[in-house]
Length: 452
Image (cartoon, rainbow, N blue to C red; front, side):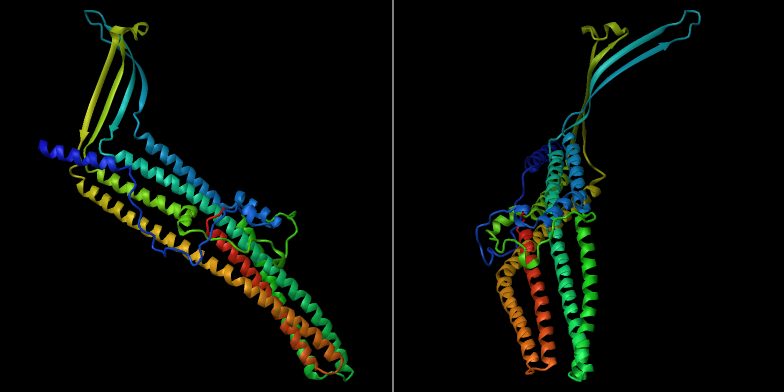
């Protein structure tokens, strides 16, 4: 039996020695490098977003967004749990005082009264952590606190990105509504002219029908754009977490919006240390590893100690004199026997949670690398697309001007002019959508790189 206890003690001390050490992280399941690797200069969101209106909305969101509030409160709760776990490793001292008075019945011999005063400093059930169970629990609580702090920063990054993306969507809806509204006004003037020409016998019924069709289609588009504008405004207000202030700075048009059109992705190793969601997953994984160590340590005996140092005296005035000192201590050892099945279940559960944490860590890395790759593709392809679409829109505008001249000269039909106007309208709508896509792509890359 003595050999068995010595073996358990040796194993437990070895376990306790490694309880606080970090196990190696799993290899990242991603390519060794990006398609492009360049130096990465971190930018704050104020440096990245130059639009004063957007800056005001982001600042408001960082104060008002409910998801961010929850993340901050989770970090505070984790800090409290860490204090509790660390406190379990320290002895608890209590100051105690008491007074006892006893009186016996008189009978034939007279009564007897006894008074006793006591005061002591007591050590209450202090566990001597030979096998590292408390250290592992404390390490798990510390890693969960770090995970909550990383989660708070991840929430900040999410809020900044969500507000910026909602802002671009709101600007797109507003500018498309403005384009549709101005186009509808032009086409209504054209329809009125066509009606007068038709009444004078200088325009065909086909020309009139075509002009009416364009106006009705533009009216339908305007109703759609109005709906999109209202929905986008609601989404922006939700992302901010508060009603939009009435005194916001004037917006900057999508085609004039200033935002870096290129961001270096840096090395893949930079991403692992910059993305707060990856760091959160890593700390959660380390906490799960510490939980496994704590579950293993629960199989070994626990050594606890209670004791007190104080004084006992029949008189309060002499309570702390040297002759009245009193002390006691009570070491105890507990060894799990019948709960062995429950302990094995706890260990199995901890190992399963560790496996889940590994999968979440790997998924966070894969997601991050995919988002960076998408952002790099966006910044490489949107530039040429916008240039080509802008040239197409300019060409469509030139066609409208030429068609007007040719129509006035009697060379082209009214149908040709209407078709040119419809093509120019569509080209301008597409250019706005493409520009918004480019801005969203840069916001996505900024967010994917873990900047804040």
